[in-house]
Image 1 (cartoon, rainbow, N blue to C red):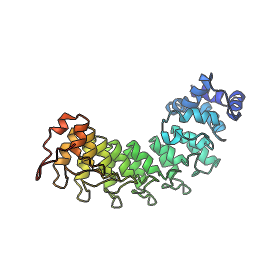
Image 2: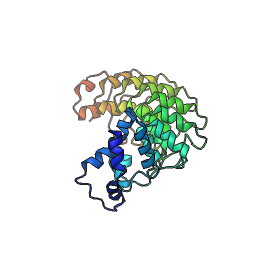
Image 3: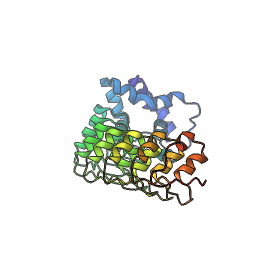
Image 4: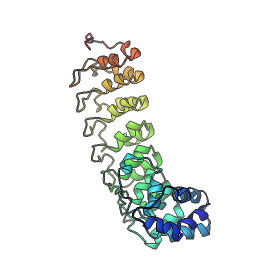
Length: 321
């Protein structure tokens, strides 16, 4: 199947489709399938013929139309907002799929800038880390030309991509590189730790917290800390891990004057609320800029189980809504 798809993608018919400034893709199911899945078949089994076809096709840029079909699989809003899917090289494509033999072949041929960014600033390494292709990551990191900490157009590094995905093996590989800053924020102030915390990736959170450079209490541009984001996502395990750190403020305010408890109560994350209320530093009656307390938010949204929890310790919790 890999050979069939690659043969079709190498045809003049498909090349003409990609070369058109306004291609008609309304009735093209086979080009779409081939663009999206040839690499899936090739990763399972790559014949010598298919390898030759892949190297021949990917020596140039992956066509505009084929790139658009392929990246529709990603479903990432950061990419979906781009109207132009160029440049996107064959090396980017092979790294996206994680096809070791093809990535190695293209790098040996010297067809591309091995550290070049695509239309979104993603390098081949960024795509390999995004999709957790450890062997491809190792191949690319073996090149002195590759910057393992190179940010994309949003300021996100390969470590950010793999931390967001929860890929522990790739995280460890990157952290072995001296150039990698494990606490580097993107343009929104999000760090690899905040991404891992927001997705509930406990293993990655533990690995990152072992790095001396990582500040577990660092806020993003909106004031959200890793604890705030894990509380919002109802990731009880991550909340517990973060609260074991003495340098984590469990009651830190964000841009709107809200605390981790405020978000957990509003969203009826009962387990997280209980964990936070065990901490003496947490003020269960702290109002936001809008004068809403955690209790008033829970009451407003009809979260009876959260309202019923013992919110008062040293002082009575205001019942004003």
